[in-house]
Image (cartoon, rainbow, N blue to C red; front, side, top):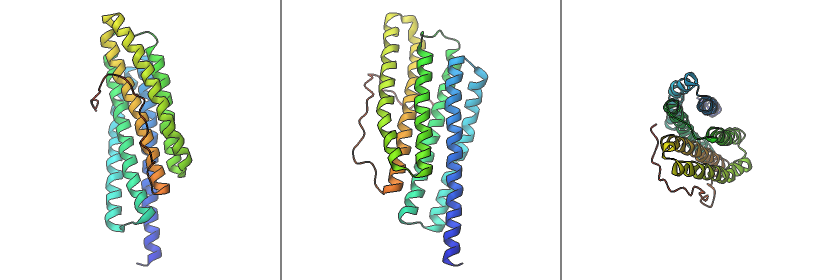
Length: 238
């Protein structure tokens, strides 16, 4: 097998993996949008669809990791090709976690249907979700076009996502303190808001991988977190 053929085969394998990542990203974007819509409209059928669709996202994640492992073993890529493969593995993991958060939101939607709600919280959550959905979309676009400048912009936007979350947290906390009957719904809504905020973190992670892919370096400074809430949330029930 000549060198040209080997390079061509590697490029073909890598292109197939890129395609799978973008397909996975599309499913994640749809899941996040549907989860937010189901929560706002109390659409139990749509919430169930999101939970079921997480299996597809998980399967794509496993397929991508299997394909990249095979590529590493058979092709032994170096330099930028190696960075590409490593970045793909990390991006797939970020997307898989976002799918889990969409599933978690849908799980709580079913519970919320049996509880009351805090006025104005659901539209605020929908707006917050829309903000981080755009972060995911733009992060995937930056990855697809290998645009490190656009990736840098997404990292900056994560601070705004944190501020949106902090504002919503204070709103929920105020209503829970004013009326104990709001506590159950408020806690569910807080966990949902935290899931959405974490999606923003994963969008930032995708952007950081794009910068690493293009430049060979991660962003120099650790990005400041603007989540000042007093609750220490553990990993959600994925």
